[in-house]
Image (cartoon, rainbow, N blue to C red):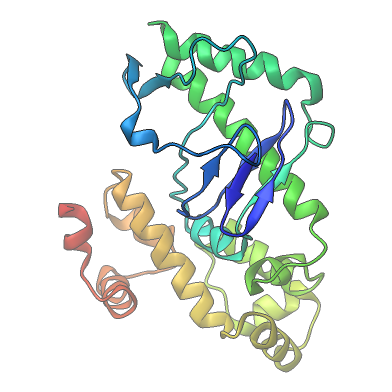
Length: 257
């Protein structure tokens, strides 16, 4: 069982639980169990980033939990996290893997315990698959979205325009061009876009480009002519001005970080 605030959630073998934001929670074997502080329990280092923790070693009936943290670097990551509920629970019989989940978890444990060639890459990809499937299941089956971004993405008109911006930030988009892609007039498109996202199309486009630029720089890309053109700018000076205006700091601060 997992307790998060006043919510008590019962988990079953093969379930996946995703807590999008850093929120304190308790994991218990049953409702009346007294939770223990994990930081006070002995931890065995497996290797690198991986550790194991065992409680009540003399018990015969044991539960194995695979826990981890995920970092979303892409600009869409923060938007997605902001739209998510406190937790996402995907039951074993609902996710794509069903009975294969135990095999995937066992493989992750095996890779973490051994010093195998490419082990880190294997673990990363397996966890990526688990996370993508969990988020996909939530997006497809959520009765409603509390955040604006996912509502806009699922809109049959504005969603097309957002997809254009996300896939092709290098194109010199205008409100008229985006409206045309969405099959709407310039005025109707601007109105609908603002209603759904509480933002203008051009400001959203600029924010997306600058967030994408920051992520790419942090990943080691060099700011040159190709970099700038790939984000829809023709001159480095105009790009730098736009970046500083939106981010509040210069490109140099990102490069030196």
